[in-house]
Image (cartoon, rainbow, N blue to C red):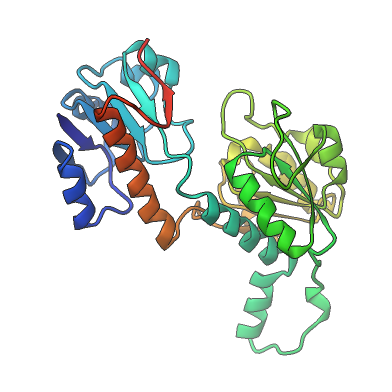
Length: 310
């Protein structure tokens, strides 16, 4: 069994390389390959770990031999699942490793924007002290947190929110109950939320799910937090609303190109570079989940499968 790590591991210490090598002939590539190189590498392997490479239908059409791949991420918008299935490739992902880390980062972003921490930090570095008026904060206790999506991470967010004394409401596609979250329709969620936090995968149905019309339904005093893909939001509309004072603030862990420069220049926006998942605990848990996925597949009982062979 030949197993490859296709593309530049973020974290793969020596001890873990040895653990993966126990599963088969294991090779790690420390770059981010172009599509032709990626297809050639995948065609030389039986199983692969994929972190950065977008596996679209054109690339997958060039892949032979490969029968299994596990994504490093919980998200799976980087792979064309129907194309993989048509090629007989089982695809898995890692849904559990970062739930607590992302939930905590949701509140790190929320507190930063609600208490104007980046600007306050800068003011102190420039010599200010006991400067109050520019930094009037918003208290979270008693506020309503709306969760768009009520899966693993949203449930972890709801647990933290309860400690702040927040009221937690949410909406999901199926109406399935979620612990600690009162389900409401989407229009009510938008109307009632003091804070709206996104917890959805990116796919055709959710791309720009927060379009201009839905953004306009939010309260002018509301704050938007997004620790998921930036493409869930119409960023151009969001930037305009923040500039015009029709939204109090936003905290974003991922940006698309649309409206990005305006958002980067906005004083009521806090940004982070896709690090919501990245903690010491989560990155080790990620490797454990990847290893579990591979070992389960090799044992004939694949776990965390997104799609199997046609």
